Length: 464
Ligand SMILES: Cc1cc2nc3c(=O)[nH]c(=O)nc-3n(C[C@H](O)[C@H](O)[C@H](O)COP(=O)(O)OP(=O)(O)OC[C@H]3O[C@@H](n4cnc5c(N)ncnc54)[C@H](O)[C@@H]3O)c2cc1C
Image (cartoon, rainbow, N blue to C red; front, side, top):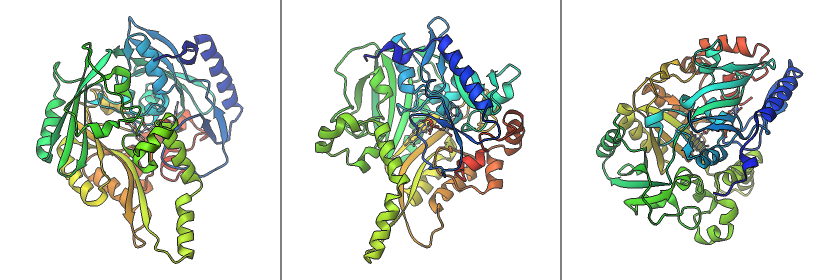
């Protein structure tokens, strides 16, 4: 790691100055719809190009302070996890939950929901946050903590997707880092055995691994990875070039990575989605790897593809030429299901969706998990997050969003939760039942009375 400190760190003075300017700018936009202007994104729903003013928050992209004694960081809201982690590693520390893609920002992961393979120990990203400074719709800046006068806003921010206010700064807990991470991969050909070993690995015990996750390659082919920080040196693997991390899971039983490479193990191949971009072809990898092996590159291409409706245009040409038109429905989702309901979910998944592989990440929300207004979960219960990103073959007799809607139905039936970073098809009444509409409306009218940020249903389902 060789980073320039001014790239990573900002001063309190400069942060305060930017806050004043943003507050002033937002107050001046009263009555208008407002959107964030920022450099990167990991959203998977294109928004309709409605009239909206852009609030340029790009300057708030650095760490302000790291206190090694108290093990906390003061971080600006648009700081990517790549930069946040690099700054923390410089001090021998790490954020407890580092989402797997480098450009996910701390503000995005808290206002959306962020997880990773350490979430069975430390919960979701927002559960590692002690304080937030939030810019509300009228331009007011509010300091929010679980125990101050803005506790209602603090608890309502996770899963609010920027509709209650923009997070400009966060105080985040940190943990000691290590130089290396040792991984153990175990392969299972039986679902019950895989799930029971996964559950056992996540037991609340001081001996528990630092990280646990799984991958379902097929209904009868699973790999569980457990990983621990270590100071023991040895030959380390490199998955930033010709080698592909997810392919190593079925070939190796042990592996060693540097701490940084472990945290970004999924980024160069965007888990496995690099396959759709041809980037698992050795020749393309060698030729283009330097620029392409990064989640942000795939996201840019994908977003360009959606923006210009390339698939629709190709299909229109095929129709004119009387060639068969194949229909596919994009199904890009992350859902959380209680551990005990996971076999039922996987049975549905392989029958109806069958995008392979599927990422499986155990999560155990902390004791206060019931207090998160828009994403409350059972404190201390073990859930499995299933991440699947691809397309399912469809047909003309199926309604738009048929498969995504089936995912929403089964997740509700099983007492789970669905992330809202991608497409959603919920009818409005069902959506508000699921995401605590009554409490949301109250908080919305208190902190964004003029509706500068739009509401959660309009933004995440109607894509306004
Ligand atoms: C293929 C794929 C894999 C994924 N894998 C993971 C994973 O492994 N782990 C994980 O945790 N997540 C994962 N995600 C989901 C990702 O964490 C969310 O999409 C997250 O919200 C992205 O944050 P971002 O910083 O890129 O924000 P953006 O995509 O730019 O914005 C997300 C939303 O948050 C709002 N927002 C952004 N910044 C702020 C702010 N400072 N204050 C208030 N609102 C804000 C925006 O208005 C927007 O509605 C994955 C997504 C995809 C598509």
